[in-house]
Length: 434
Image (tube, rainbow, N blue to C red; front, side, top):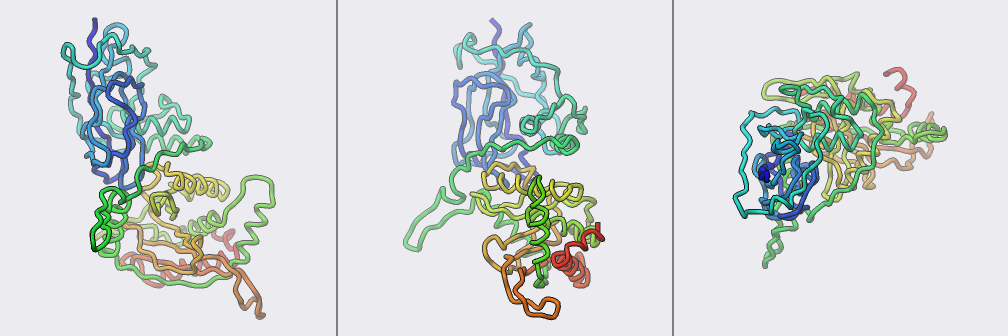
């Protein structure tokens, strides 16, 4: 009788710059039979809570890491006894003889031989209890289970995606480009568990109060904001604007049958037009050099169960206003549901911060390092305003603009903010800018 081969599944690279993840919840037990791409563990990174699917099907023979323990990238997560495929080939038709590196976020790693261990006699489940998976269709050059899951959630056929990685390997960026190119309709995200509240585990109470360790998202936020405050010489300017015209435009657009347009989408469209006029603000400082980004990856602040998140809408300048509104709504709902992955929470080049939803007028936020600029929007509320020489009640908003003074001087920052304010007051100016 053919003996199953034990495959070791290691924690893949879950995002840009992440070195590990904390185990939130195990989704399988030792001895359980799992299918290819079945989620086996839920982990929390500095970016998001994600379910990690295993690329092997068979019987789970071991788990590594307790709940609350941090597992480094590349460390073992589970081992799986993979039954031989029909014809005697070990590992099934879609399993390579040599384990290739688990990638999926566009970063190629050094190849290494896969580890194989044959179950000794009597160890683990009996071979007869291991189901034999059906032969897989054509082999697709994609290794990361997270990339396969992204494609599956968007109904994308990986066999039709051209890989840009080594030997045609399909990476996360390849899948994202294919999704954008085909304009696949969004699917309702299945909320992932949010796990224990950030910082709740490991809290120590004493006579001086409770000491709560910074973990997961809170630790990442603390580190990033500290670095931003330490490294970036930021300055803020602000202006009040009459947003009555903007609110009237939105009401008029939404009277027409079709998708509704949000105020946030109109503000995003204004920001994108402003960045076309002032492209030096869509930049970041790298050492003693300034990198100007060719595309605007628009981040925006959204409150989620784990705290404040910044979802990123990639290539936002390529989207029309209705599509902008739909994508912003989708990402906002994903932030609230805790279902956004690292790919949707990293890589921003400019941030739009609508703190008006909290009922406040103004703010001087820290920049989202390494970005060079952020537009803040306060609440839109009725205030007395001089309009056409007469005192009137108008819908007024305060706009603030925080910028990296290394990237530009006050003239550029003031020019951008004034352009935004003018478009808020007279939205028809957008037609001239576009």
